[in-house]
Length: 265
Image 1 (cartoon, rainbow, N blue to C red):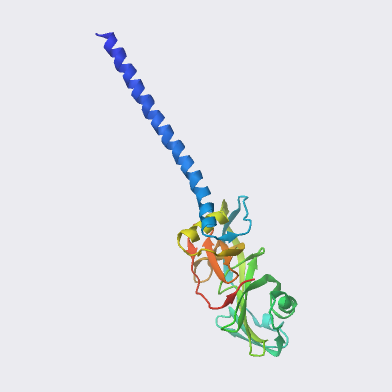
Image 2 (tube, rainbow, N blue to C red):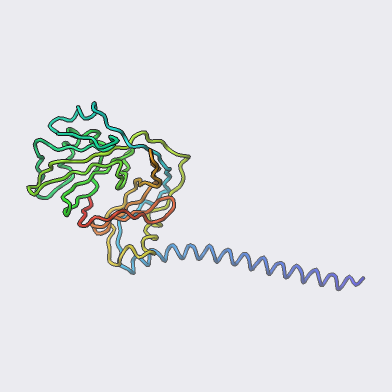
């Protein structure tokens, strides 16, 4: 047995192994470096496209899915509403009302002017927040809230006021979600910057745009016959006109039916 040759084979083998391990190490290091460079490059892309935004939350945020069900309004509910002609649509989950005396709005509408009106004249009025004003349809929509988080464009949790040519609120339609339950444990959601990256990659945010509002809320993920599942959702207002929504868990862009001439507060 030639020990000299065996020794040489072992040395060559270990050298090859060392080279392979070094190659793998360099590959992993470069991959990590690339991820860092990609993140910084995205912010540079936004700057190059002249897309402006205010300071974004940087702390890690955890949230969870929710479940809720539409409330069935009763006669005892409608009896509380004074100065209104009220009807319920089957199966009683939609309340429609017409005011005996219209409520006058200012020429330049501000959500604050309806705060007391909501509290005094609408069931659970303090649990809704301003959503949007549609000048084409002459409507003002309020979204229901859960723990101060708005439920975006949820047909089972909103109030839609209708105003006339004299700028007076004459009627409204209301739905309300109840029986909220938290599903599973809280998990970390996407950062708002990551959600903006999704919108940018899909070409949804145009160059020279300004993101004027960043807000976290919920949108319907699964609609069931008697209930629904709500997912945490990032809401971005662009140029105070356009509303964009991204699922904060899964990262997909959420498409709602668009309304023309919608104002955002």
